[in-house]
Length: 412
Ligand SMILES: *Cc1c(COP(=O)(O)O)cnc(C)c1O
Ligand SMILES: [Zn+2]
Image (cartoon, rainbow, N blue to C red; front, side, top):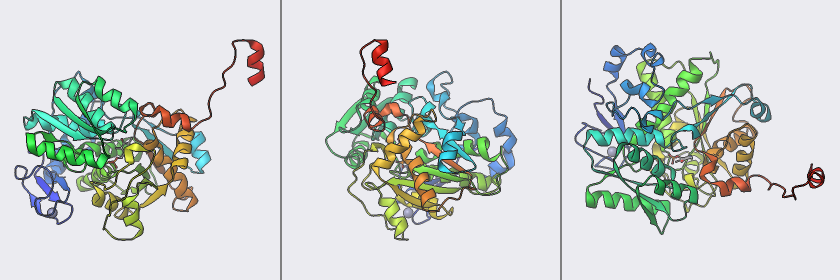
């Protein structure tokens, strides 16, 4: 079976056959959507085929992905995805909702959502015989690529801003990738990765540049479909909260649901809400201005994973909200830290960018955008262990006492 039939530019709508382009639309630089063979999938595959799969990873959706099985069955490549969804009752009450799900991506092999994209890119790289894969990253995309590359023996080069949290840089180095820290912003690293890709012929995984990253990320929607939508008869559409930097996770999630709708397997399109930090809100600005003109900002937020001047997948990210009756919401760094603490009290440890989605939901309740009867899901995109410095800022410090019962009694 032909696994995909081409690409469609998200800007001009022009279509390209699979072998003609690699990254962006040649005429206007628009990000490309991968077009699956929807007719073929509709006839060849039924939802039951997916639901009955024994594979406990993103590869259970292989017939809906634009790559072939890469193999490597006994590596971390096969433990990406199928992340848990929780229904934390305390948090649900605190926010004042009837139904709340939290999907926790920290159980991915490198502890963030980015593993979904990197796993797919490893498969793609094998198909096109890529020798070296390069990516720019604020840390998580790089760690996801480096870990997966190490697992399968693929060469990888990672550019990250030198300001990335220490844990993320350590993770990159431990995975043994060629790590190069850039004395500049994430946006500078992005530019350098593209130049290096051109210069040395490396295969570029850059988010919102390589059309396949969103194809990996859309698997989260397939899981939400299986774990929530097929389990419960919801009388209102599910509202999904996603933190947004480059906008590729939210675009991928939108693509996943659009694919399901094309297969005829989706009863109701979820509403998708993007959450940005006030200090990095290029897409939220365009949403508020009610146009598609996304202008760069000078990003400054403690949520490093969503600190982006010019989002590389901004247009599709904007449409994920506008086309689904969702919205964009801004939150400040202080409420992001509160989000870390709230999630922690339900046993979920989130990095700042991951807690941003919860903070956005809290704000959306305050603004009246979400009613208590709206079934809601929050994507927690990465583990708190990625940035312990911010985690410590979210809570008060522990008391230090001398090791005696008297001293203990004093603090209790
Ligand atoms: C990358 C990332 C995001 C944002 O994804 P974009 O595609 O850049 O919008 C959110 N949270 C975490 C933990 C991330 O690593
Ligand atoms: Zn175009």
